[in-house]
Length: 115
Length: 114
Image (cartoon, rainbow over all chains, first blue to last red; front, side, top):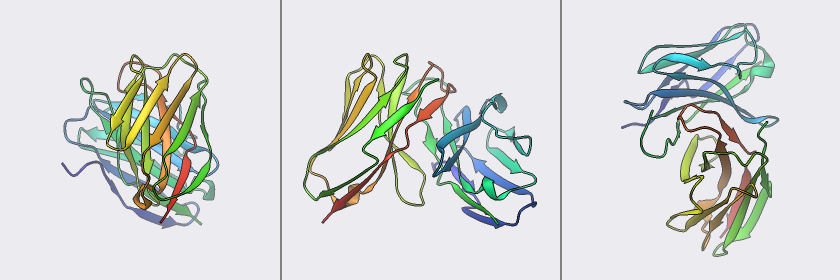
């Protein structure tokens, strides 16, 4: 398996623009997580899905952020409109529902810069 | 609210040294604890996961211990190598299901000098 795939790897945009980040989880994984990493706040969970359904979105900072998972192999995190303080690295991770050690496997991240 | 602290924030050692990274958490009611490695500009790679009922896990030169009652975990790296240079993060999970929240520490940035 190729692991968790994220695109784009880097995104530079201007304030006010819409940004869409994409994630493909590991095939067969039932949970998908979106994290944000900044120097100031470290790694924070934004939202997670189970079987394509959002379970906990309490980490989503504002209404400008939205996430969808239309099917088991694809999720998006959208920021509209973007602001400079949204600049961060956004990670997607996935894990199995049961069995094993419930480890989360992370993608390489999308580095977002909002000018 | 669970808080995870990692000490030191940064560590620089010569190649070949054995070293210990520390992680502490405020709420001992955890399901498991996971150690990750993050290389610059890259994602997180899972190194070791310790269930709450376990006291340690080993993988190669890495050994992670867990003292749940005192809220502490250590990651021991034996015979360190320059390739071990990275940021090491610990994270604790509260519940049993995969979806329960992972709370991360801020990481220890390790540099192993040749």
